[in-house]
Length: 303
Image (tube, rainbow, N blue to C red; front, top):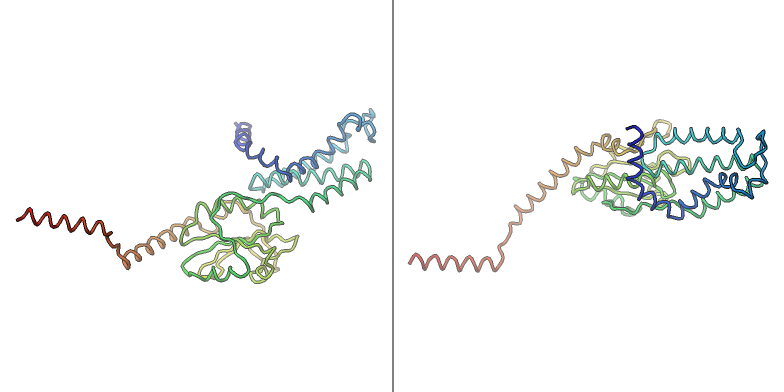
């Protein structure tokens, strides 16, 4: 049963995995991840490589290469324990596979190491992970619209994600945030996003660091009445982000989304009832005429 559950999960997500792998970013990532294996195992190439094996077989891994691969595999497994989406799992595998390949190629031949490192740099500069394009109920703010929208109606609660397109964590979190917006968006509870990588003034005003080494991306902030109530991850006294896992369960619990949603639904319902009381429905002309004709018919029958 323990082996059957992951297998069924993999088969369930298989069509989605195929869609990812067909995209240029993932095709290039797969190639860069397995290129050392291809070089070491391809006949006609591997014979010309150096090796430390006692049998002199240059078409198989030596003990040091196996040791490096096993060590980095253990790191991937530890890293993936905190991954919350399939994209993060796959991204961790790609990242540490490239790190392993850099070490292995430099150990094999410094020229091959430099060539592979150059390919990785070109890849990072030219290929970006595909952005999430699925369904969502999210309003995207600019530096000019965020303050106006947050203060438009004090009865509306906003959950705003501060993100940057270059951040892998933000890209992985996009699908989770979109799912939450589909489940909880209503008249009194709304979801927004603002790209702090693009709007620097917003990042300064709301104190969200955009440093390449920052742990504040993504940041989720809850606004009520246009004022910040809470945010995750929290910032300590030294200005550092406290580690926090952006899982759907954590967000629902920490931000009390179920309670907020129920209150927001009551608010929108009360608002609709007030509107109906202030503006009662006027009967249509056809219905009025029919009613008058019916009244005349009834009076004739009485006569």
